[in-house]
Image 1: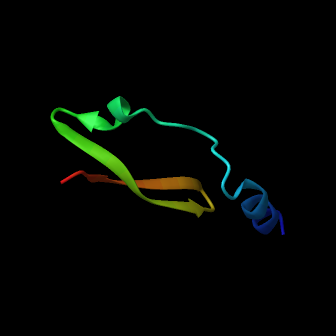
Image 2: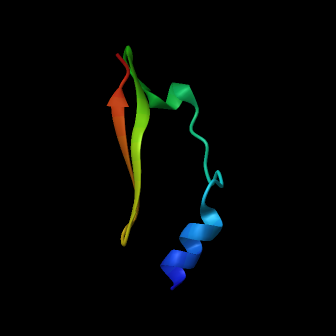
Length: 50
C-alpha cells in the first residue's frame, strides 16, 4: 500500500533537477530516457543526444 500511495503522491512532483552541464561527458550530451522506480530505488537510463 505504501508503494502505491507514494507513487500517487509523488506523481508529477520534481524531487531533483539535473543541469544539462551535469549530463555532458566530453562532447557528448546525454538526456534521461527512462525512469523506473524499483524496490532498490530510482533507476535512470541515460541516452546520448543525436
